Amino acid sequence: MRAIDIIQKKRDGHELTTEEIAFIVRGYSDGKVPDYQMSAWAMAVYFQGMNARETADLTLEMAKSGDTIDLSPVAGIKVDKHSTGGVGDKTTIALAPLVAAAGVPVAKMSGRGLGHTGGTIDKLEAITGFSVELTREQFFAQVNQIGAAVISQSGNITPADKKLYGLRDVTATVESIPLIASSVMSKKIAAGADAIVLDVKTGSGAFMKTLEDSIALAQAMVDIGTEVGRNTIAIISDMDQPLGLGIGNALEVKEAIETLRGEGPQDLEELTLILGSHMVVLGGKAKDEVEARQILEQLIRDGSALTKLKEMVKAQNGDASQIDHPEKLPTASKVVEVTATQEGYVTAIQAEEIGIAAMTIGAGRETKESVIDLSVGIVLRKKIGEQVKVGEPIADLHVNGDDAGKVSTAMDRVREAYQIASQPAEPKPLVYAIVTKNGVQRF
Image (cartoon, rainbow, N blue to C red; front, side):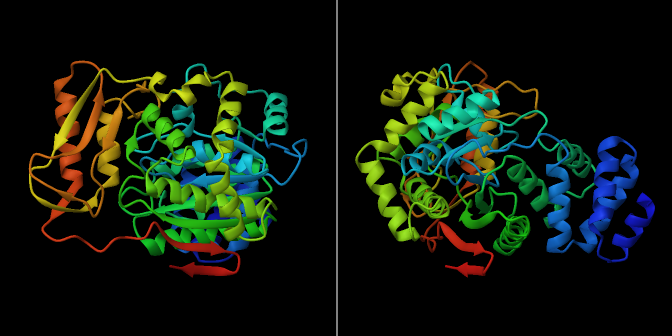
């Protein structure tokens, strides 16, 4: 078997065998297939695509290229959740304890942020002392004992995917649905969950900007999950404005805490309940989403969800008193108001621009080596549909230091992100569609 024959076969639009996909992935991982041949193969896939079976084979090969987690020591049906990334997306921090309080074990591995998207692990580290590094035995024991643990991804999870992604990033082959879907799902499958709920973002702050592309990606990932025997569903949710109000690590932890108190922003609470309801059904603790939602709403009302978050924080060596007293979380030294320069209604908020503004003042990483400031960020004062007057605050920048240039740049980005018109726009749905193995349900 030769790499050049596999490249030519895919270039000409033919279906690759399981063995051919294994050969090229393993060869690239081992250094036997050079970068220039793997680049040619990725470009062939970019133009010719892959069917569900090919994409599943690619996913499994990448999952098997490094460590895989066997969650069988954890009792119950383990349900994982993955977001394709957005701005202000702190749902995992609220979801993990909420779903665990409903009796569904959540053994979750999460990543760090890069660019305009935040990472759950960075956010959790805003809680003083919170440890994102657990041994496998500690991880299993914690989930069995309290129902939830969120840790950082192992350094050797899906090394073939890491290597291939780095190549795609510099060969203009990132935007390939089979390659994106297999990249995401290889990590989920390696992490060992029995069932997977995907939150696929769509809009200005998402990787997929259009609804049709988002649905296509969701279908590809659901197909992979189905092919490899994992019960998988995808929710297509809006990222045409940031989720919630807070963008920045400690600010987002505070908002997740507020959500578990029943006091969070409406969109964040609603999405948390939607995702959580599907996780509870897949975990076998409710017959349908209606019953699951009732269970979750009760767990928020009676304080069980917040108690579960405190248990998780304490188990991972974090300061659980900060859950009762979020004001003890890292706090920026000053708050700078960003005011509107025109009157009207907010019709759009370019989420990616808000994310970049937050990164500019230190809340995110421009490169993997960047050091983030856990206390800084942005809190939106106005969202789509709300009326605004000239000089009225539309957002607050939470900043440290005296770099007036960075603050000014961030203020300009926030103002540019807000689109204000004389008439209100039609409200956009929070959830556009649900994708299952049976098809697409649009709303």
